[in-house]
Amino acid sequence: MRITDTKFNADVTWKIRLKSNVNHRHLILHLNDCNEHLLPTMSILTRLLVAVLCFGSLKTHSVAESSQFCEKDGLKENCGETKEDRSTFSSSLGVRYLLYDVNPPEGFNLRRDVYMRLAIFMHEMKNEENWRLVLPPWGQLYHWQSSNVGEQTKLPWRMFFDVKSLQKFAPVIEMEEFLGSVQKKRPPIDEVYILQHYKDVWEEGKEWQDRWNIEGCIESIPYSKSGKAYTGPFWTYKNLSAQKVECASFQGHAALLKGILRQSRAKVVMIDHAEVALHDRYGDHIYWECRRSMRFARHLVEIAQSFRKQQLDSSDDKDMVKRPDNWLEEREYTTTGGGPYLAVHLRRKDFLWGRAKQVPDLQFAADQIEKIIKKLQLETIFIATDAPKHEFAELKTHLSKFKVLRFEPSPTLKYEIKDGGVAIVDQIICSHAKYFIGTHESTFSFRIQEEREIMGFQRNTTFNRLCGREEGIPCTQPTQWPIVFK
Ligand SMILES: C[C@@H]1O[C@H](OP(=O)(O)OP(=O)(O)OC[C@H]2O[C@@H](n3cnc4c(=O)[nH]c(N)nc43)[C@H](O)[C@@H]2O)[C@@H](O)[C@H](O)[C@@H]1O
Image (cartoon, rainbow, N blue to C red; front, side, top):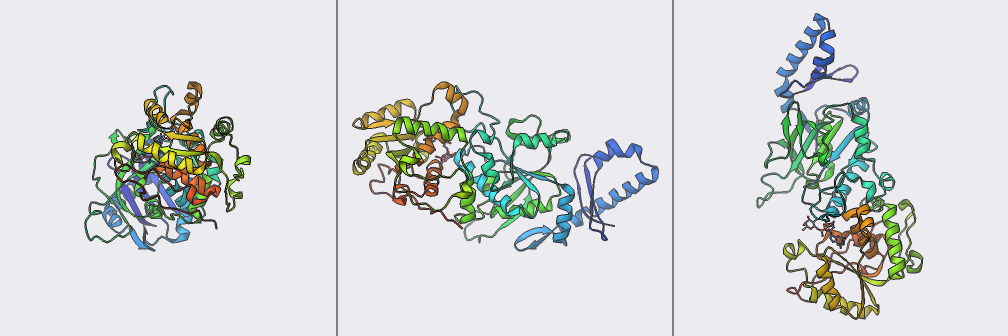
């Protein structure tokens, strides 16, 4: 037997990995478990043997740490580990869980994009290793400010998405399912890696290359050690903690995470600041399969359908929009129809200072909307917006010749579907309109454009945006990201 890899944590958790040269089986001993369960029952000889192994392993620690990784196909992996080693090790662990979280200020629709980066990564890994991607519960988003909708924390994905549909693309599970499977283990998360940008990433002339390293944390982190475990935000779950927390400087695509997961022997790994990892496959057919799998929750689709029918005289049949129940059955469509209304996503609030030049004042927005609706010979305008009531009222006064609508759920319905649900209903309604205009660089608008691409709308009815007064008309219009099928 040869000791191949050891780690020693400052507390009593010693992990020793022994690898048999003969049968390549890994044996992992958690010495804190030994302390609690094994040592009292061991013979003196066995205790001595374990002590010698531990001592030996600690002595080899520095060597093992420095030679732990090898570059292979641009990925750092454990040196000398063959595919067979890995698969034997993998199956000895059974199912492994990958949790992730995103920079706290990021909004709902950027988070959806980060999900895609990880889901595509898991989709690619699923034939090699037995991972489950744990869907991070929604909550405490900066933009979800309604006070009359109850607590907006620990919200499961099924409130907003069709999880079965997601599972047709990647092995994802809800947090509750994960918690159910690790209940007895303390702490439930073995290792947390907080991704951070390299210090030198913005240096001029620095060549881009995919790389990652475990390094000291550059900024302060929201995790701290309390007894044997690290506590942290963990989506406000009091019963979640981690055994180890480290920072990883990271530059590259999500596939590079393989290196982190492969040097780890843990069953439960969490990646924080997952937004630092880039898309593996932006815009190709796999990207679009993942995107198509992100169907909205049925109850939200039905709410949007009912609004379209009652307020906008719109339904998939009337509008000639095709959308099979199962996204796997979708084909490349050409939709010339759409609901008989003009839909506008008018982003306000933080965009008024964050994108001051590109976001129009209400009068200038109304001028542009009026021009387009006259050209389209329509009478109804649907406005999706985060604007407060008084701003919407003002916009209406500027468009008094037209029927101007907004989705305003009853307090009971809003309590049920929360701010996230209202936003999704808005997006669904916008995505079915004959013509859509969005807001510059809003991920909320981007997601609507993608829905319209999936349904096959003509691109000139989709990739449009309002111009800021300072920019004038015309202004640069959104980049077109065409859908790709296999
Ligand atoms: C500059 C960046 O912009 C990003 O915003 P951006 O891409 O528009 O889009 P999101 O990331 O979705 O964030 C905007 C949030 O504001 C609400 N919101 C915006 N527009 C509407 C709307 O038309 N209807 C409803 N019901 N709600 C809306 C909604 O909660 C949405 O998730 C932010 O996420 C980042 O934190 C950052 O501020």
